Length: 113
Length: 112
Image (cartoon, rainbow over all chains, first blue to last red; front, top):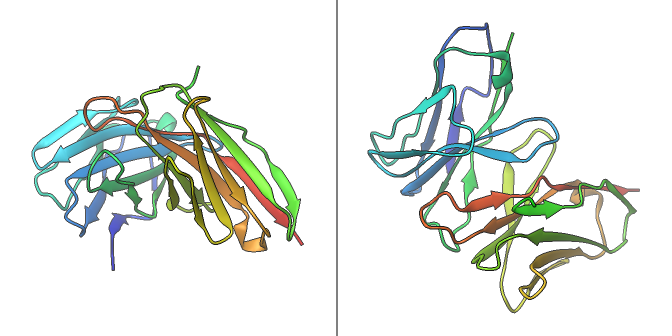
């Protein structure tokens, strides 16, 4: 039972490089989310999507882009990596927004040097 | 005021102890509530939803107090494996999908 799968698990980037964090879910959930978590801090929402073709900004969207071409996939793109983007990134999905909990992938640890 | 506030701890308790965490939320119209568990360097995992009537799952009991706008988590007979950070999560009921707010977590260490 895969659930939410994120790749890669770890990555080191140089300042100014770009990369895409992949996220896929097999639960047929319409809602998907990207969070970042800095050490000792709570989760902060970067972007979210309510269905294929629909995305919207969260609390901290600057420096990131997303797309949602299918229900299953929700990649997060970093165009010009900066040290402030060093963090752990979690993708999540949910069946709804009411009493439906979110299910998380196991995270991508990203370091920008 | 933050949307969701938790005592960060750490709570260090001996095995077998009972420990309780509280979490306050800012919006009286909040609709649903959850407790998540996050182990060190791992993803958050749903521990339990919190219902208006309160609910229990084995050694874990969750309560909701709408009048005072807080939820609680009680852990009885603590085990070493309960050591983790416990996240309070609240659906604030805003329009749209951007309505789930996470607390920063309460860290629990159970000591042998």
